[in-house]
Amino acid sequence: MTQAPVNVTVTGAAGQIGYALLFRIASGQLLGQDKPVRLRLLEIPQAVKAAEGTALELEDGAFPLLAGIDIFDDPKQAFEGANIALLVGARPRTKGMERGDLLEANGGIFKPQGEAINAGAADDIKVLVVGNPANTNALIAKAHAPDVPAERFTAMTRLDHNRAIAQLAKKLGVSVSDIKKMTIWGNHSATQYPDIFNAEVKGQNAAEAVNDREWLENEFIPRVAKRGAEIIEARGASSAASAANAAIDHIYNWVNGTPEGDWVSMGVPSDGSYGVPEGLISSFPVVCKNGSYEIVQGLEINEFSRARIDASVAELVEERDAVTKLGLV
Ligand SMILES: NC(=O)C1=CN([C@@H]2O[C@H](COP(=O)(O)OP(=O)(O)OC[C@H]3O[C@@H](n4cnc5c(N)ncnc54)[C@H](O)[C@@H]3O)[C@@H](O)[C@H]2O)C=CC1
Ligand SMILES: O=C([O-])CC(=O)C(=O)O
Image (cartoon, rainbow, N blue to C red; front, side, top):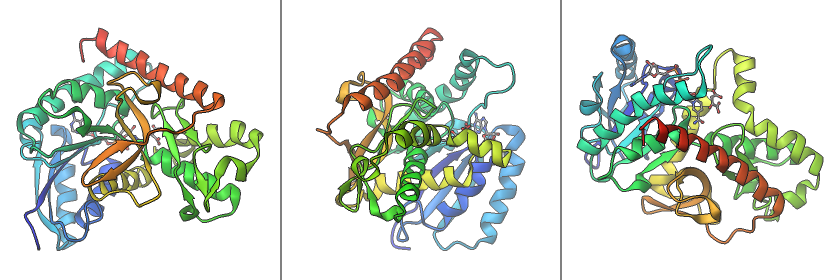
């Protein structure tokens, strides 16, 4: 081992994403093959035993980069010294639950977690919220961590980004690595907007390469935006390994940078770019370098894109207003 272990806190560690995620973190895929990690797992008391079972399996992996595993049911302890926090555990929507109930139940999780991050995380903390509704949960956590720079709170739209690349590659019969500069705008929800007007395929504009408005509007956009539901329908459970994969991609790029000539999508606090109200956690194209990110500036937004970005951002404003009313931000 070449350096001190990085503390990685993972919430919802006993869940299905947690099971797919932890082994990849332990194997060095989250941060890089030269970076040892110490896992700090947070679960609700009823699920601590299951998390302990996963920890036994992690031990059995004999991962050279895994420096230790601690399991907690108290957020204050779990986030102590955290350098990276993956907030996966959330309250899922259950039958008969209204949107307001869901936001309130998640407020009960993300408020104390934000406070715990504020109180005890390391100065270089980077937070990724995966648990849904991811953008607004990130907004709640950020609101309760006033001492942490706001830009350290991000929400996951990388799964949507990866889904969009895969669908576009399939349509054009090219490799996923031929596609660059994909963007997801807005909320991680069915209103999200996957933008191919600014994407490139082998250096050519992707919208021109596709040249099929009917496919774009009626297949590609709804397919990507509703892919979560399609997976649930097929699998009987929501995306787990692909979500874990996207979380790995998100943090890996944030820490190690994005490749030259490309960008990724991240839900980040808006600085007002592209008319998105400041402070909202919305998905943007970002370039990462030296452990930080910047929103890509100067992209052309045509009328078609503008209407879709505005619709998704309007939904984010509604969610923010709802949690403001509940006193959660
Ligand atoms: N942003 C994205 O692209 C995606 C987000 N998701 C979301 O990720 C979340 C997790 O998904 P799964 O792992 O499939 O769910 P799961 O239900 O299998 O696991 C969630 C785990 O979180 C734990 N948990 C609940 N409250 C907690 C708390 N206060 N502190 C710590 N742990 C807590 C539960 O005990 C459970 O073990 C869900 O909200 C899901 O909707 C899923 C796929 C993609
Ligand atoms: O749709 C869901 O419940 C899970 C999710 O966020 C996704 O797969 O994008």
